[in-house]
Structure formats: C-alpha cells, structure tokens
Length: 538
Ligand code: TEU
Image 1 (cartoon, protein in one colour):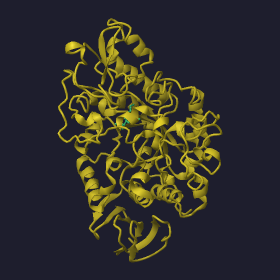
Image 2: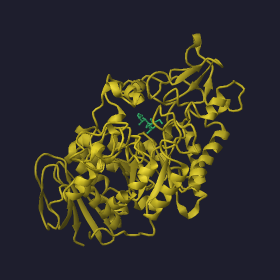
Image 3: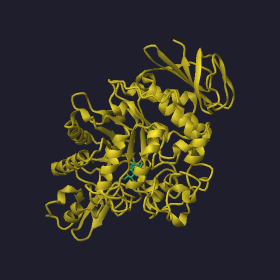
C-alpha cells in the first residue's frame, strides 16, 4: 500500500509518533483454552497489531490478583498472575514486540493494592505494625460511624472498619482495594521500585491508574453535596470531590514517578495519567518543564461526550478549548474508548464511530484506540444474573456494566470467534460470525481497513501528527480543519449532519469513511455522516 511507509521524524519521540492500542488481556487472545486471555495469546497477535499500524500496546493489569476488580486489585506488583502467564512470558512478549517495532506500556495500579497484598496483610495486623502507615487508617467517627462521608466509586462508604484493630481503612474503590498512603515516603519509594522492576524487564512506559486520586485531604473533611446530582447519575456523584480528587500533593508523587523514567535516558519511557478531570485541572498533570509529571494525561472528553452532543460545533469548541488549556503547547492525548465505558460504536453507531476514528487519528497528539473498536465492535448484552464485574454494575446502579465493553476480541467466525478453544470468561458478542478480523480483512471497505488506512496515513505524514491544526469555517454540521506542516497540507471534513453538504476542496480525496472515494479530485459532496481526508495541493 502506498501509505505503508514509516516516516521517521527524528525530532519526535516514539510516544508522539505512534498510536497507542489498549489491550484488555483477559479478552484479547487465550492461548491455553482456559477461557481467559493471556500474555502468550497476546504474543500470538503481535503481527496483527504491527499490520494494523499501531506503534505501542498498553496492556491492562496482568499481575497476581484475586480479580475482585479483574486485575486492578494487585496482590504482587512484581509478578504475572498464573492465569496470564509468567514473567518469562512478559519478557518474551516485550522482546517480540520490540522486534516488530512495537512498544509495550504497562498499567501502574498505584492508588491501591489488593487487600490480599502482603503489605496490607501486614498493615492490618496491628496499630503498631511497621506497615500500618502504608495505608490510610482512621479512628471511627461518632457512634462508631465511618470517619467522614467519603463515598467509593463502587457504592457505599469509602471506609471499612477493621474489627481487629478498631479503625477504618480508606478504599476509594472496593473494600478489597485499600488505598495506599502517599504521604508516607516509604510508599513512594516502593512504587518507584515497581516502576524500575518493569523498566528492567522491557516496559516502555506506564499508564498510571486513577492518577488523580493518589492523595486525599489530610484533614479528612466531609465532602459537600453535589447540587447537580440527578437520579441516574452515579451514587458517588451525590458529592463533589474537593478532598478525594486532584489534591495538590498528588503532583509531588507523579513527579517522583517521572523522575524514575528520566533515569532511562534515550529509551524515553512514557508516563501517561488516567485523569478524569476538566481541562483546566487536567493540564496540571503535565507538570512543568522544570518539574515534569505525565508526558500526557489521557483526555477523556470524547469518551464522556454524550452522543447527542457529537456535533461539528461542540467538537470544534472542544478541540479549541483543549488547545487553549494546553497553553504551554503540552502534547495532546485523545481517547475514544476504554475498558470502563460503553464502546464508541454503541454510543455513536457505526457511521458515527467511523467519523470519530477519522477525528481521533487526524487530531494533533497521541491517539489511543481500544481493542475491537477497529472492527466497530459494540457492547455485549449482559445477563444481570451472570455479571462478572459486580463492582462496575453497582457503580452504574445496574444500568450498565463494564462486562459489556470487555467481551472477547472477534478474530474469525470459528467457535468463540477464535478467542479461545475453551469456554470464554465472558460470552463473545453474537455478531462475531460477520464482525471479525478475518472477514473485515477481506472487505476493502471495512471498518478495519478504514482504521488501518488512517493509522498508516498518520504514520506516513508528520503533518497529521504534529502539524498545525486550523479549524476551517464551513457548512453547518461539518467539522472541517486543516493540518499543515511545511508544504504538506491536509483537509479533514466530517459531516455530522444528516444532509449532504458540498465541500470546496482543492485537492485529492485520499480517504473517506466508506473507502469509496479515493482519488476523487476537486469539489465534492459530503454525504450525510461521511468524513473525508483530502490532500491539498501545495
Ligand atoms: O478507573 C478509575 C476511574 O477512573 C473510574 O472512574 C473508572 O473510570 C470507572 O468509573 C470504574 O468503573 C481505573 C480503572 O480503569 C478501572 O478499571 C478500575 O476499576 C479502577 O481504576 C480501580 O483500579
């Protein structure tokens, strides 16, 4: 394919040049027939990722875990859960990824451990345990009540009483996920050692889980009610969160994590923050030139934008607001979906998701794709009597559950979509016989080929990665912008409206959301909910 060349803009580090692809390993490829995906399974699929055109894979937790939160409750930071493989498997995975030019980003579940972690087992033994202060313990409030009104993401108070020692411990998530105490320098040092452990084994970076929750108010003040709360919102959002989120001392911790990465010199490992905050607060997670923190925090604005607000006007305003917030020119990081939210094709429909992927992959910055979204995979149906993610089910009040966005990857039309030879841990979506990699590889106009064309186009043209971004005044309903660098100029036009729109574009259509317009020159009529990428004449 003409576009399958890799430009190597030497001035751009890899984490700016390359797109990131999130793999939820439990659901990606099972290698041993136990119905749960694993690292050797992911190894089998590296050629697919290289073919697709992503440059880095972010693997969600594969460490030893009781799986109350499917890996986000870690009982050993420096090992691999037996259901996922071994340390040798990770090492081989990293080597084989690197051989294919792929980087490997791992999850740093820093905010909390599993309650089975030896650190917590030690901490809860006694009020005088040497590890007592590795977690957040408080005396009961009046009449034995929790120390304050803080709420867990997963329902109920963020405190659980330990009867043995008569104190409560903090858990912003499950009681089986006790929060670490980052006011204790020993905890910071211990997590720095975890970072070094994985760097030494080939990791090229870290996604810091719940990065904006690491430190809480030292006075443990009650949080105020949220006046905007309405039925249908999450229970936790009955409160505002000035004391459990975005504490200024969190940045000190992230600076220390970043400093460990800076020890690696030209390997340029990346630090990405999971930060669900408005832009004005989000951008603080870059830190400063003198005291850097994240290379970029994920910008979740497109993940949380309701479908009825996906309009040219809203999206244009969003992109400009994000640009304005990153006044220092800090590097952008856009996301469309992840393992915690409904899939983008479910939120926007297939046409909407095609448009969204053109947007994601032609905006400035690092794009992150979620496994399966490149096929247009949609949420799976969840049987309330067979829910695996009980925590997420409670979080969303039974209205939704994260299992829906975690169904197995759909590789082919064989049983269980080629994901496993056993019984999958979650049912494969019933549309897999038609919607799978093998079928879409054969269809030149498939969602898969659209995403692949976009990834290779982006890789081959620096202007689409780091070039100037200029919104173009256009027809109502059409989000149009130019990307330019030197003599390279592109026009991207996304018709979010339901009516055709004429587009005056002096150039050649290189790609359209339905892959049926390539080579067209000159003015063109945009069909309803169609997007185009036009190479403009110099
Ligand atoms: O999620 C933390 C967080 O941002 C939550 O709001 C999350 O988006 C969701 O609402 C939880 O269902 C991270 C992980 O992405 C998530 O999978 C874990 O459950 C959570 O931390 C605890 O580790």
